[in-house]
Length: 176
Image (tube, rainbow, N blue to C red; front, side, top):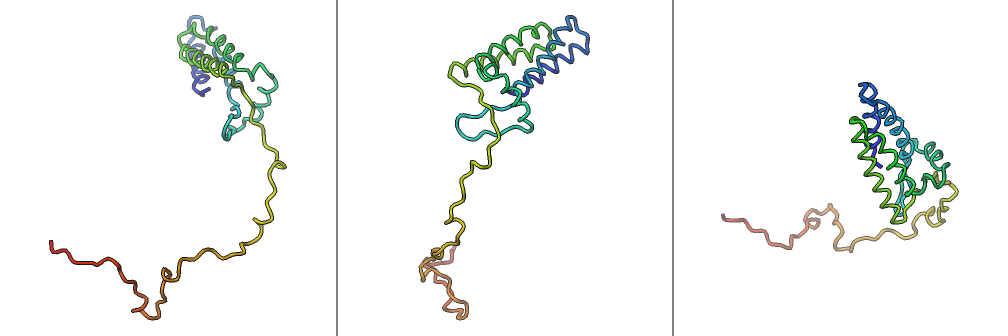
């Protein structure tokens, strides 16, 4: 999920609490929901194809999210969780934008769950899993690199007349 979702929740909650809006308790709830969503969504999941790049400092959050098991791995649960979190914050104007973003994220998670996707953590790779370098790579090449044909090689500059190349296209001056 995009970082803006929980940023909108946090900012809307802070504005609602600091401004002492009517029903500011919903704004306080919005702050707590923003922090919760931030902790839940910060670790990136592993991609099915290609490479997955881990966010900076993601490992400790990944361990926390992974410890909840199927509750955080299943996208149906995440879709329901996001839908449930977005409802109370929508009762205060300052947090409405964050709640709309959470509702959209809930729909996206539902679509991903229907397609059969789930969250897989990115764990550090073990160094022993690397393939050993082959013996042939350590040795220098046995054959010289390919050379152009003799007539295409540069001529020696000792004899300047013989070293000059002949232009196969006739050059004529334009009379324009």
